[in-house]
Length: 129
Image (cartoon, one colour):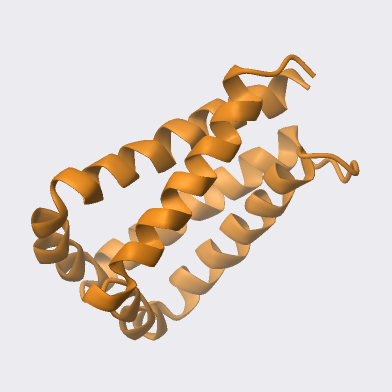
């Protein structure tokens, strides 16, 4: 359970930081993030990082319990799959990622980031089991 709480704290900090960044510096992110998704080198690097984090999560937290911790295991598998796909076919993600960053998706992205940050923050910082 200690690993679950640690990973939940890390994910909460990441999601809430990105939420606050988009909320308070949205124009900056709208300008800079598209530059990342059109550069294959950044996508491949992101793929390597996703594979590493996915494997680490699965190595230390491959739990299929019927409670909140299964979400972390699912995130580990998704990170691993996404990383492999980013390395194998980075150009396919350029179009997909630029669609996510469009203005009409901005509010939805903020809601998802806040929800995930609060979800992981609750279990990482405010529960003991």
